[in-house]
Amino acid sequence: MIYQRFGQIIGFFALLCCFCVSALAQEAQRPLAPEFATGTQEKRAAFGQKFMAVTAHPDATKAAYDILKKGGTAADAGIAAQMVLGLVEPQSSGLGSGGFVLYYDAKKNHLITLDGRETAPEAAGSHLFMNEDGKPMKFYEAAIGGRSVGVPGLLRMLEKLHAWQGQLPWADLFDPAIRLASEGFEVSVRLSKMLEKEKKRFEVDTTAKLYFYPDAITPLRAEDKKQNPDYAITLRQMAQHGVDDFYEGEIAKNIIAKLQENSTSRGLMTLEDMASYRTKERQAVCGSYRGYKICSMGEPSSGGLTLLSTLGMLEHFNLASWGGDNPKSWHVISEASRLAFADRNKYMADPDFVKTPGARLIDPTYLKKRAALIDPDKAMLQVSAGTPSGWKKNVKRAPDPSIKPPGTTHLSIVDLYGNILSMTSSIENAFGGRLMSNGFLLNNQLTDFSFLPHDENGKPIANKVEGGKRPRSSMTPTIVFDPHGDPFMVIGSAGGSRIIGYVLQRIIAVIDWQMDIQSALDMPHILHRGKKLEVEETGVEFAPALKNFGHPVLVGEMNSGLTAIRFKDGMLFGAADSRRDGVAMGK
Ligand code: GLU
Image (cartoon, rainbow, N blue to C red; front, side, top):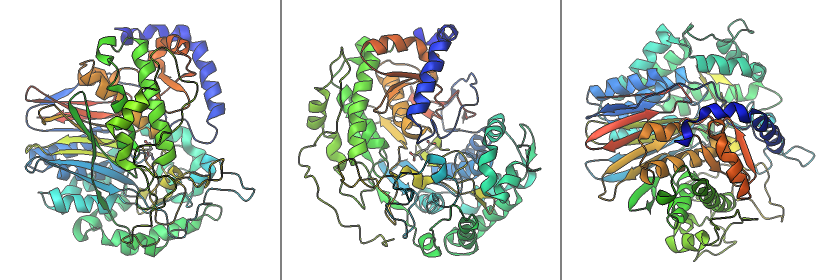
């Protein structure tokens, strides 16, 4: 297969550098990826018959595996693993972050989604990330420090998940993380390499700096044993007394104090913002693709709708017969993605604050019309958002009265009872706002809002900052059911707005091209987020042919963090992305 001809990369190296430089110039506002790459490792799928856990770190997978073995549910295992991830993979998620859960309750044959996305402080306005000269801030100017920190939704979300779907006692789920935090965990190569590159960004907070650079200069080294006594204390508190102290007690006070410490980037968050945080239960968004039912997270994540919109257009093209080696397939996938991203960028936002078309964007009749815009031989010159039927423009929805005005990781888990957890959690940029309180880092999730309040025509941007609102996400925790309605695949990823393309590609690879799950995860990424067609270095040979279709092509590093489980012939195949440290363990 063409994917295996990695040797050709070297021949294309000069070409690649030139694409990368131009990309950097174009993307001055945002970093190329929330987390950078730290190398790849060859991986094999794990298989089991009873249960399976896949996370981004071996310690977290082991914690989930042990809970599943004891008869815990996927919810129990996910909570235990998340507590470990906050310790061993602090660059991606933790108690100071937020996330989304998509959960399949096997007994009831029912899907639940929980929205634990951060909220903007009540006092935040649409100019939060604008400078006095009327220009938007540079990304890191906005991200580092207190200004970008949203109310962390993760713990309230996990509390609710446990109340609904937990089986083992809440307190037991904290044991593996408490043990590792007290006795010390082994620092990964990835964490150490990331710290080497990040040092200057930790000047904002001495606590965080001295945790990661104990002599204030040298980063934690791979294989060091690192303890985090403050995190152990916080976890014990959460385990014994629940999460109220985090939102309403001493920990909330410490978080607010931390946001005030840095005079150049003070946070606006108050104790009331913390206390009023609520997890939202929302309906999963589902659509069909070649007879399979694909379900994912709805707004405020753009992940599910953009994924389903792209797949709905691709139904009209025979990707199976063209195959994954054929640049024509990638051209058409890219065109459908461009159309879906145009809708995403215009419409998708927190539905409690903005009237959005929602499921109208994935209506099959609408998508058929959008698909008709695609020329299989040539890239469209321009792409703009469509108008779904029944959608009245410029109608504002009043804010939901139940709302007081006011780096990323994915876990795929199947338990003994057939329940499924697909959960993505995120601190946003690697190490978030680089602020540490009570042994955990605080997010910079508010930079997922639009920095500009208005578009070039002076119209308000749906995803502008508003007090109490949740920033638009791209997280795409997904579960696929086969044409008989049985679970077929669980999947999700890290990677900012590329997450959508990462997940899309694997669904196509498994359904249309019948690839096994590990090969599907490992194949080179090829995706389009609206501006350029992006090709991972290992797939550089596709670049010339895709340019011939008329696409501007960017070749570079793409640090996904996929985890997935495939249900096949009564077996569970778990796979982790070779681009990160994750592992799968099943029985
Ligand atoms: N903050 C991003 C989002 O919610 C995810 C960042 C990442 O994947 O690292 O879409």
